[in-house]
Length: 254
Length: 254
Image (cartoon, rainbow over all chains, first blue to last red):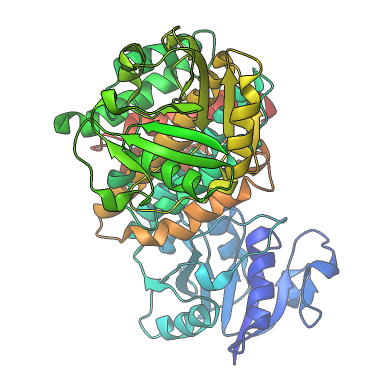
């Protein structure tokens, strides 16, 4: 049984705490939160502490706090030569304090308070400074997920960058779709089946094979019509840029 | 029983033919294709014709061919005072020849040869020139789908524009994510759960509520890091543009 202390009480910390407590390989001893948290959000067995002086001995310390705070927090953590990992996509492993054995436990998914998470489907990307520690993280990760990979900080930075595209940027484009419909009082839910199907196709087709539309087929008439519809919209420029981006990539194939 | 002739043999025509033949309200008499088509792709009962001189009498003629060809094709169609509809998102109803009663039967979904389509979940947008014809199209549409709406040509143009954003542009962003991973030989399927969850969230949260990431929280350090990673990439500019687009919208809330 691997004993764990979770440092942080945000979405990632909360979901991870619940998932690890339910796993047969892990025992979450404590969860540290600077501010008061509602005990009801966490498994009963887990002690909630608000002072680092109450920190117990554990096999793994998991830091799940905002990226900017990870480095400085790892310095004030009162333990030495312990396995201390963070959960960030973009922070290098070596940003952690060198007084401990460093590692990363990065779950490639978006977490929100509202919705349950199926951990078995979340890729978990691991990295450790000391080779033997990878076994501990692997045991933990495999008890949660079917997809566990060892990934360097450099690779993880690229994965996180890709994630910003397919999650943050895609979601913003959903918003643009919604805003365009609002101008005509058309409900956004009409677009939902198309959004779901666009995502679903990726499971069976490469994005290249799935690409369709006026930009790809260089349908100038439709593109002009769309730019005209967007003439007083903040989204006209982005339409032109995304159309150009598609044409830059597929242009040679026309 | 509403009798139908389908004009065209592409993805939309093929899926629609199969779906209408399976419905209890419709009978597809003929499918017209200029070029030879494999009979196996269509229901056995449907007569495949390659000359318009063999066209039979029907209640509805559905033109499912590329947008650019719709207007001129509707002129050469040898019938008069019939209900003739097209299936395009971006072509106005009045682009059809005025010698017939015009209409639109627009299915808001992406169709590909490879995958089956669940018609019951596809919004169908209807428009007719003659008020009484809407009943016929509604009967057809409701026999296929749970979501049937009457939509003007102007509204449909906006819906189609939104669809270009949430389908074409989103799919291109999937490709960018894939390309970024390729530079490190990381398989694209690692991003799949995130892509699915990003789309799934839209069912329970508005895109505004679901927005996260460095652009929204104005995390300059991460944005700089990402722009640096993309320094020799064709995608650096688009990253900057999409980041700016998010900040333009959410900036006031920071």
